[in-house]
Structures are given as C-alpha cells and as structure tokens.
Image (cartoon, rainbow over all chains, first blue to last red; front, side):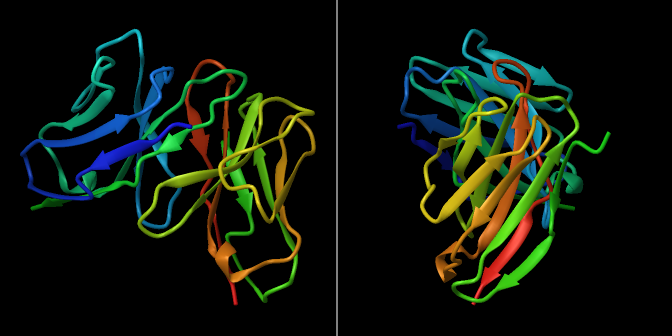
Length: 113
Length: 112
C-alpha cells in the first residue's frame, strides 16, 4: 500500500518568514495530494490540494508543489502569521471508488511573534 | 450547513464495554470514512463506505464494525473495547472522484 513520509516533525519560524513542509509518497499511482491544518482539539481542515496533472497550485499565502518523478510534494506558507501555528498533515491517494487517504505523521508549525 | 457532525465528543469506556460512534454529513457526499488518530501519528483509515450500501476495510479495521445507515449517516461500533482503542476518532466525507475530503470535529475515546 501507500506510504507517506513527512518532514520536519516540528518547525519554528519567525512571524513574516516562510515555512516549507515536505512529503514523499511511495505509490506511483497516487494522483491526489491534499494538505490539512489541524488546530488543537479540532478536526483536520482541508487547506489546499493538488492533482497529479498539475505541478503547482497557489491560494493566497499558501502554495503546493508536486514532483511526480521524484514522488514528493511540498507545502509553502509565505508571510507566516501566529494564527498559522498548528499541526499540518499531508496525504496521498490513488482515488477510485472512494478517496482513501494515507496521511503523513504531521508537522507542528510554530510561528513566533 | 453543519458539514460533518459526530457524537459524542468525549467517551470513557471500561475494557469489554461496547459503544457506537455516530456520524452524519449534510453535503450530499457519496463516500464516508472513519479514521483514528493517535499521538505523534497521522490519521489511519479504519473503514470506509464508497457509496450507500457498501462498506470496506481500511488499514486498521480489527475490533471495529461499521454501518452505512443511509447516504447521510455512517456509524462505527466497538463491540468489546480494549485499551489499544483509546484514540481520537474522526469521521469524514467526500465526493468519490472530485472535491475534497472533509472531517468532523472528532470523538475522544478513552478505554480503561
């Protein structure tokens, strides 16, 4: 089955700096890669996703890049703010009749004021 | 539009007790899922339902059963709870082939 590895496990940045979180996946048939933000005591919230026919996607301060050849994808957050502090998860799936996601182990992002 | 709702929010069980976690979605999604989240780990898929009337095992199905009651509701049952099932349980839903997967607020379960 699919295996997703996520790095780093913790990341601290100064407010206004950029943050980058990286994930690798093992199943070359995976074709959908979402990113989730989870605040303490809450469920994961979908923040951005990318499909395998696209190399990059942006949404305001958040961007995701995908390298299918190397089987890795990354989340980029620019101009970080204290409210960006949370745990971020990457995930991958090959889709099909349902969208069974395989998750990375998470990155605790702390934005220091 | 409430999205995905789960009940209860918290539950404490003794070893051997049974319980059912309830989940409902109002987004008219075909697919529904149950995940568990343990400290320091990502979410792991327990069971899923691609569409009403179907259910399939995920990565960690042992000790659980599910029922897709109708298009809106998907329940998870623990027949004989064990301490290893102490976890936070999340229900989610999605369209089968497009759109994102959306999660509920979770149920925090402790088995003593």
